[in-house]
Image 1 (cartoon, rainbow, N blue to C red):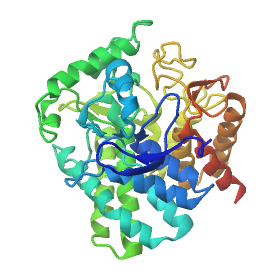
Image 2 (image 1 turned 90 degrees about the vertical axis):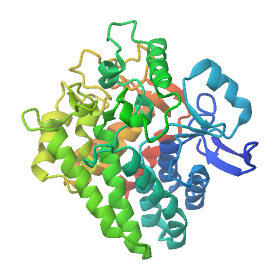
Image 3 (image 1 turned 120 degrees about the horizontal axis):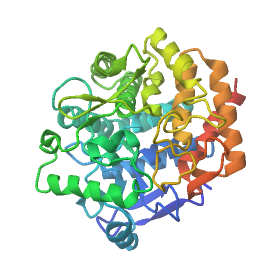
Length: 409
């Protein structure tokens, strides 16, 4: 399936050669930033050279100032349907968007290095990655607290998660909470950002969200940059390590709720806690340096709670205890209840990092069983394992990495 999703050619925009795995030929024909990072990890179990090629292609979108768009629109013929009919996206150039996504790429490069030991590849790919992380720190942390902010929901990749509803001014009242309602709210953001520079947009406080998942991935990426820099003798590995710790400290100081035993996202300049229970409240578990007592509470009180996240096919994107929980995709909007393989993949490795090996193995087992029932789909019903959304969905092949980890001991 990964091979059949590959697209290659020469772009009309800048005459660049492209060769990558698209998320789904029928639903997502372009190259997405965090999707490609996940694809690279899955491809390690097929052909490490294809894994490296995935990220080489992705990094062609890196700009000199460090910015990287969340989509590379290689195929000109597919533009009209996407830009005019289906999706509200903002372009910085006909070839790439003005939107970011979580910086999973550093974790992907770290995994490639672990498997291949290819220092030359790390030296090749490290400079644009460093520039992107530096751009995030410079542009998306306006209050300099160690937490980066997203300026619209798509930037987390969790597009219609109900945790954004209040900030997006969307009341949850089924069946009105639909894609058209979301697009209308997105247009309000785009109108507000029109004419503003990238540096000025976070200062407008139209939608400013310090997302726990995004920042956990950011801290994890900084940790990976430190390790990779040391491995190839690149400068300033200690800088990345300090920055990673600073973000973790900020998550603990600002987002950790000791009473509830979980983390909350922060909304707006006022940093109001967005008290909607989604899987992101557990996501600092992916950080090996997270305090062991905090990790234990996340796992024992919430992940394994059968009224919240430990459903037959965990981990649902929204806790079952939330009024917005939509496990069967009735609203036809994403990230409102179904289970996603990339979430399980991250949490699996977090569980192992904190010594919860048995729970990690059970999560892997249920994830693979879910795919056996539902196919390789975009997301799944956490009760029945029925697959929904895009077919032949690329990052759902992360199950290959779970299987390899379990069978290798």
